[in-house]
Length: 254
Image 1: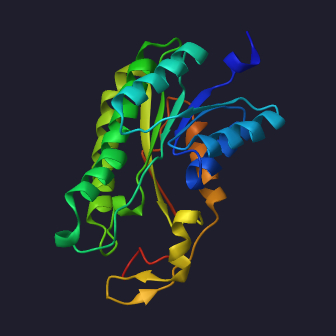
Image 2: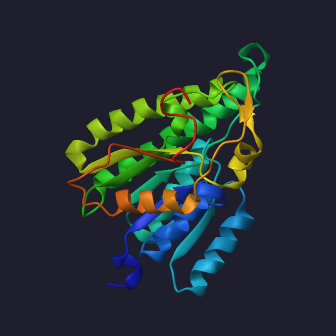
């Protein structure tokens, strides 16, 4: 059996930057073969080159998770190349302009729902079908829920609605996956220091109407947290994990 086949196979969506990139690197460094999915090919290929220089196994597959045909093609590639999938990290996501609900366009609403919810459904649907048929059977699915799966920020109705919905999806997949040895959990991340979160340090709207800078945490902490979940035996599951900057305004009055 080759080294590639012996390694567990992981798929990370939104792998080209931020949380996805950090988590992909951590999985690669710990012996996973990692399929990197994202809309932009260039950052995925750069990560593959970086991995190959360290004798790690990575494969870039450009994919828009809102496109059902593209997701099917992604999983066909995984099935043909590796024959199985052990871990799916549903990380791809997007936000909408920070405006009142009456100012949010229907197109912007649908774009967020298509990526953050329907995209997760499409990838989870495909992963579930592969995991329940492969030998040995089973696998793990981890969804990026965000702190917004618990509490909204001002002017974030589309993002918050989709992240609350992810919690329901996570619970349903966790339940339905039991008989196929498919574990499903959720990691809710608050203020990881990435390109997307730079605005937090500059100041963002608070519930009381003020603008305030918020503490950030190293994104590598998120990568460590995902790795912990990924390395558990399928007989154990982290159903929900919240990992956040300690002093961010979330717990209590904020």
